Image (tube, rainbow, N blue to C red; front, side, top):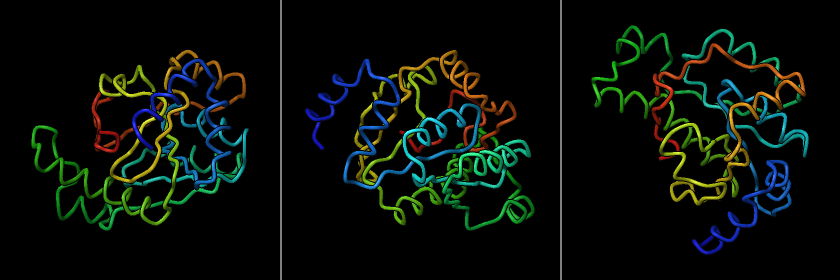
Length: 208
């Protein structure tokens, strides 16, 4: 898909609802997947997609450092929504990494942290995309999350994985996500931790 096509789609869907974007994606002939980390508002994302069509493949990279609440919520949402989750994990377990490599490197050690991020998230994610071979990748990116994400749009082309990346909730605010969650009695994960980001305003590399 070239830049002019992306620009046309972004203009066309700029004022559409996330449901409209999801419906468009699922009507395309390409395979569509959604990625999740079961973090704060992921229940909204997964419920929204499930409300349009059940059984959309869900990709989740379990880096091994999730909180107990994250694991519990993932299991509860999977059962409640009947999700088809495909888990991908690092080649080195958390226990082995903690003993042999000293666990999560400090952000100050940029080289070590970059290697850590590659090993626990980026490599498993690349493996997932190679195996699943999606033509459309639905993400939960939102404009207000980081400065980098504010520079994106609803539709973009991911050159690394050669697929169309969709962010149906791109223009939604935190309050809109919360309103949807409350309306559908969805849980909010307030105990989420991503060891590859550490700070909420950092990018791990998946979307950069």
